[in-house]
Image 1 (cartoon, rainbow over the protein chains, first blue to last red):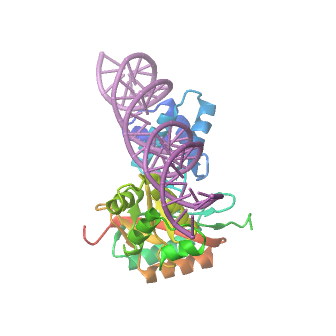
Image 2: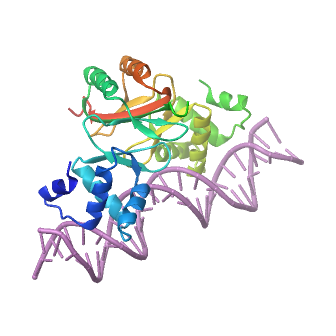
Image 3: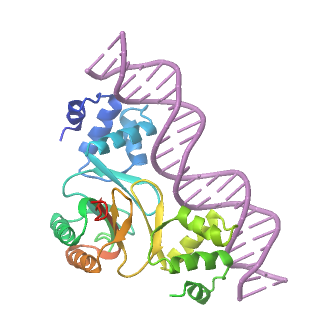
Length: 136
Length: 136
DNA sequence: ATGGCTGCAAAGTATTTGCAACACG
DNA sequence: CGTGTTGCAAATACTTTGCAGCCAT
C-alpha cells in the first residue's frame, strides 16, 4: 500500500519526515517498532527528524487506520502496520521478539470471540508470551 | 486467599501499607485498579501511604503471582488479582469499564492457542474492546 | 501567500530510585 | 536490635504540547 498517496488523498501534506517514516513502515514486512527505534531509523535518512514528529506521524497514521500500537507490560509503546489479520501477537519471554500469530489461529480465536461475546467487538489486540522456537 | 499470610510465609514483613493494600484487593471481587485509584483507596485507611509504596507493594505481589497488570493503549497500568481463568479482558470503548471474558470463551480461545502455537505459552493477557451491553 | 508541519524546548504523566528514619520480628 | 520497609523527594522514562519559523500546495 502507498501510505503517502493515502495521506495526500485525505488532504494531508507530504513532507519529508512523513515520507521517511512511511517508507520505513512499508518496507519492514510488518515489523514491530518502538518509537525510539523508528526515530533512530528515520534519522539515518534525515538527521533532523525529531522524536516528537515521529510520535505525531504515528498518531496520524493510526488515526487513518494504517498503523496500530500496543503497550508491553513495562516500557514503551510498540507501533506496527495494521491489517485485518494482524492484530494479535506473541512475544518471546527470552529474546523479546514479537511474532504474529498464524492467520488460521487468529481466525479461530476471532470466531470464538465474536460468537460468545456480549460485546460488539470493534478492536482487539493481545499479547501472548512464552518461549519461541528459536529460544527453545 | 489470605495475602498477608502468603507474604509472611515467604519471609516478608507485614506492614500497615501491605495490610491495607492486600485487604482492598482481597475484598474487591477481581476489580481492575489503576495505581492511582488503589492509592486513593489506601489513603482512606491510612493517610500516609505513599504512591511509591503502592507501586512497590504491587510489584511485590506480582512477583509472587498474586496480582498481574497490563497496560491500556494510552495511560497507565492496571492491576488486578491473578487467577487461572482471569487473564483476559474486554473493555468498553465508551464507558471504559473492563469486564472479564466468560470462562468458557477463554477456555475455547486457550485451547485454540495452545494447539496451534509454536510457542510454549506461559502467559497471556489481552484486551478486546468494543461497546458493552450497557452502552448499546 | 497561507496555514499545515516541523524542530526545539518545555511541560506533563507514569514509574522508579536513593536515602535517612522507622518499626517488624 | 538489625535490617526490611517506608515516606519523601528527586530522578528517569515516555509522551504530549506550545510556539515561531518554514515549506508544500
